Image (cartoon, rainbow, N blue to C red; front, top):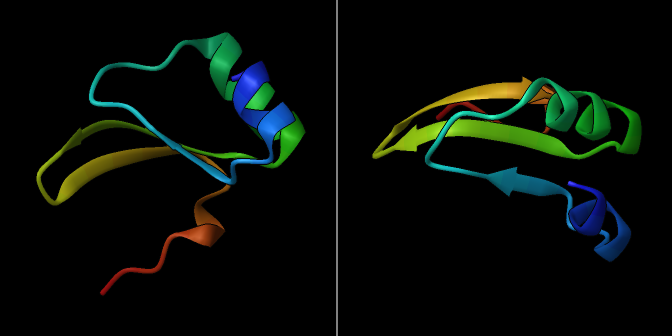
Amino acid sequence: MAKISRLGIPVAVTRTAVTYSAIKVAENTNVTLIGFARGSRFNIYAHPERIINI
């Protein structure tokens, strides 16, 4: 997460689980963090306001 925030990437998506520390870093660095992304389903762990439901 630290590298992602340093690079200025606004959204991080992973197919697997996210750690508590990744959630905290994402919250503190304004990165939207998405985990368990499979097909059209996913969980948002930080800054969900960037994601629009269609």
